[in-house]
Amino acid sequence: MTGAAPTIRAADLARAEDRARIDAFVTAQAAGTPFHRTGWLLAGARGCGQRAHYLVAEDAGGAIIGVLPLSEIRSPLFGAAMVSTGFGVDGGVLGAGVEELAAAAWTLARARGIESVELRGGPAPDGWSLDTDSYLGFVRPIAADDEAELKAIPRKQRAEVRKALSNDLQIATGTDAAMMTEHYRIYAESVRNLGTPVFPAALFREAMARLDADILTVRHQGRAVASVLNLYHQGVVYPYWGGGTQAARGLRANDLMYFALMRHARERGCHHFDFGRSKVGTGAAAFKKNWGFDGQSLTYASHSLHGPRAINPLNPKYAMMIAVWKRMPVWAARMLGPMIARGLG
Image (cartoon, rainbow, N blue to C red; front, side, top):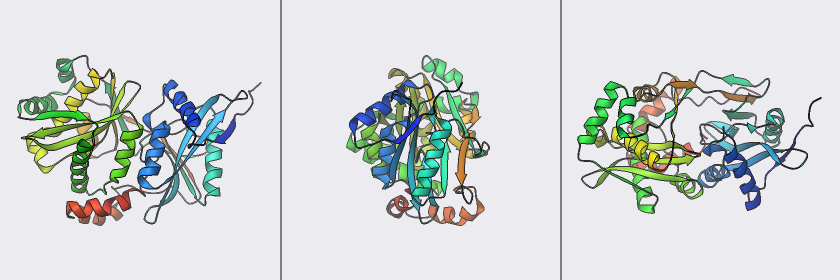
């Protein structure tokens, strides 16, 4: 005999009680991530102007047994979709009620005039399209001390880290407005160099304000050359938005940045380092493998009337756009990028 189907409702994110109950549930789940937290969903909504929805599955007694955060993403360039979770690399169904939550997400999407739902991670609903070939996730334990950490890094990359450690570089960590401004300047230059639109600064501010987060910056002769905004959740550090200036490469500042973050996270009590996702076959994936991280396939599920959105920088149709973006002045990229990036989700 099967149990009764859960009740699905839309949480009222304006109510502190609803947010606290959801976040307590997320924290108690081994598979929970920062991207399931109400703070992440609201940061995306407030920072990028998208609408936030949060579906909750409850048992007969009213206890939460499953959740599904949803960002309503609308873009004139990339179309519309309900995404779980917008601007995150995870955030699919967490807990029980997978089929019911997925069905409710589809019903909500159609009611909002949206023809596609994307679930990033979590169990896949029956009958949904699966993508297991596009992305790899990179996670490994943090070593007990710096020397053990160095030994965990493959020889070639270890040599680069040792060279970085011998350079005249300084590490700073913090959460104040000056560090946030410094970080955003570096991040904007870095993603411009990659041909990627930069996210709005408001998204970073909102994430810093609503989540357990900080910034680690590498400076050379007093000037910041590399910086990363980090998320923390249940003993895991997520270096989420990072980058370096042109000068960072010669100084090996990015190498020192990630090694210093491993030390910083260890001192904060973290036990795992989540290097995030990268597309299969890219330089970013190879970089993470060089650090001793084994890529694990990520499963994303989607349901749509006309096929899922195809937002892939490896798609040849974006090649011209990327090439033009790389040549754009940084000030122009910072002005135009957020208008495009907020629709990527």
